[in-house]
View 1 (cartoon, one colour):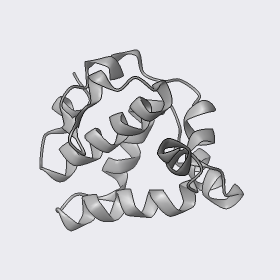
View 2 (cartoon, helix red, strand yellow; view 1 turned 90 degrees about the vertical axis):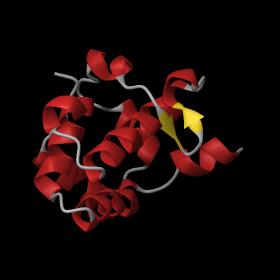
View 3 (cartoon, one colour; view 1 turned 90 degrees about the horizontal axis):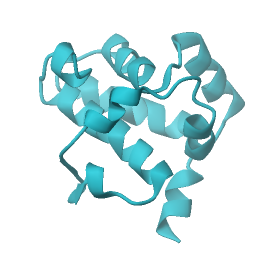
View 4 (tube, one colour; view 1 turned 135 degrees about the vertical axis):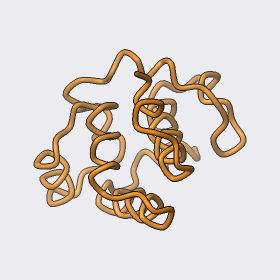
Length: 116
C-alpha cells in the first residue's frame, strides 16, 4: 500500500526536506518549527530527539503531544488532493503539515498559516 510507504519514512529524512523547502523560498527553520509546534505540540528539543531516535513519520504523528484542534481549518489542495477530503486520518495529518509548509514557502503570513 502506498500510504504505508509514506508512514514508514524516517522523520529524520523528511524534516530537512521541509526546512529546505522553506529556506529556498526565503523563510527559515524557526518558522518551520513554529508551524510544527502549532500543528503537533512538539518543541525543538522534541524534534531533535525524534531525529536522533530515527522514528517513522507515522510515529511522529501518533505520538504528537497535542494535535491542534484548529488544524481542521486547513483547506486546499496538496499533491492534487483536497486535504479536507482525505479519508485516512494519518495521511490527512501528514498532508496538513505539507499544506502548512507550502503556505510558508509561498510567503503567507504566520497569522494566516496558523489560522489566527
